[in-house]
Image (tube, rainbow, N blue to C red; front, side, top):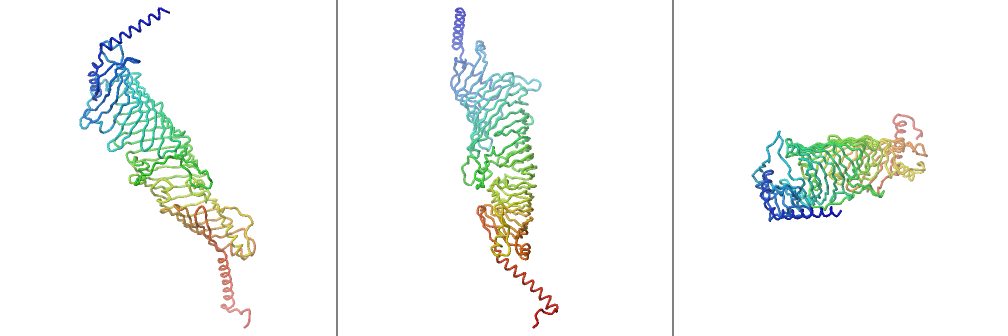
Length: 606
């Protein structure tokens, strides 16, 4: 044991002595010109060091440099600059004055991918270290590991805003020739939003620069900030990626992306021309948009407006609506999207067998297909959206068959005054994609029908029968009533313009009553004015002659006021008086016609 320890001490002493001798005999500045020349020969970039290079022995044998820059010839600003750089080198080759670098680490580096870091008018000339073989590039990576620590990436296109990717940490390791493992993490701050992400991938550069293949085996992200739900948007994903340089085509196969526990699978591709073109095909089993948008149903039954739990961005004066929503970015690319989902939940409504096909042509969006089954019925929607101007202009053609209406009214913050299986077909257009915009700046028409409709909170039959009972003791209605009005079939034509919904050709029939009329609904003010003519057909007791008159008499009923406190106007007494007077007049005129005009002898002799 003592002999072994003695041997180890001797070896350590020799190693220390050798390293000390090497440090004294080899000046790291002798490699300065060599490294500058190699970088220029292989990449065409200019490498520059400020200050002298020096050795760093422990814990890794390294060369330490001060501030360094890497610049494209002719560019006013460097592509890469760093406060300091560390080069971990192999010890044995140094004895023969050869520099073999195991790892490069840049700390607090700034990577500038901006117009200022590109050459003004001088092309970058890249000289390969050896001639291409079999048509492939002679690119080679002589360095095993590259690390960026606490760095900054500045990315900017011409005439576009800068994107700052902060706290950038990168590990790039070459395991085999032209095969690398990449690990990257960073944080992006923009428009009062924070995006934190990390990525791990295996890169295959054997066909570089013609083709790059990557296996993205780990990707996580989290988005927080303005106009984002309080819980944030987060998830993970993986994919097989490849890039073809000749066609500038990026393909993502076996794509899996998770968004707040919603899993999307499929594939995507992009042609990265001046105007990028994207093709995305996704499928999902279960999608909950409420968990992504932060939508929650009202907790109070008296509350009709649902809650969006988001962090609201401050309002900027004279800011266009589409700019506030970031929709102007749609003008910069073309895209085609297809999405199929077994189930989708939107504002508490469960939709089955959802199919969506849409495309974007530089700000002109077309919904080619949007259909599904929901609320015991089905729907299909065609539509267009234009974001080229200052506002988002939309037009839709909805077709709805036998869907329950009450959950839809509740989902969009409207009072559940009406329920039943509704059907509709029409055309609507406007600007803005929220309830505020719809209630003020949309227009169009809809043909509406409903089966087994119910008006909640008001019983029209009860109102009329009680008013008649108060006016005459000859008839009365039923003793017990429910709080709703049931209509077996309801039909109407709807016209919307600047927040005013006009209802015409309104008609409804049931075993108890029949009605027709018109209405005007003020959506912004949440008020209505409904004028009906109602015939109560059944549940009368009393004078049979008067009951026949009532069954054939249309009684005017006006329902008006705020949605939360409706009022009604019903003048049965004057109507009955006029009706009875008219019936008496008709009877007298008939008697006169039969007994005097036709020459019959009068009942009373003069």
